[in-house]
Image 1 (cartoon, rainbow, N blue to C red):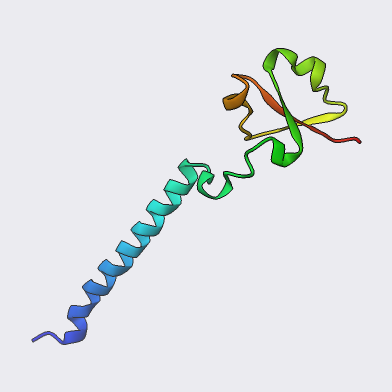
Image 2: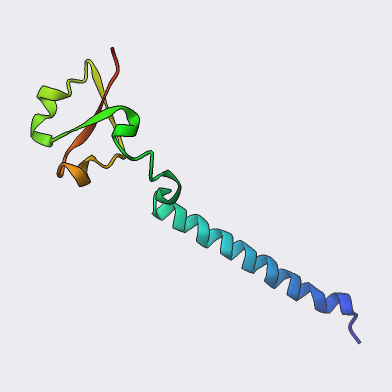
Length: 91
């Protein structure tokens, strides 16, 4: 006859695996969405004190001597493909 302790072991293992799988799924969801759930306000170019510049005007309006490009902003959605957020470095 087996002890009760030996029968509880598989249940504990199953619960631990279920919790681990849940954490893995949540982590993958957050990584696939690039954390947009938490950082939706920081993606705006304006919150970084920048200006969206269209792709054809990048060399004129956003020289890298005075500006830097802020990655991961909403400029492509608002202005068009290839648009960048230019943030002034030297004031």
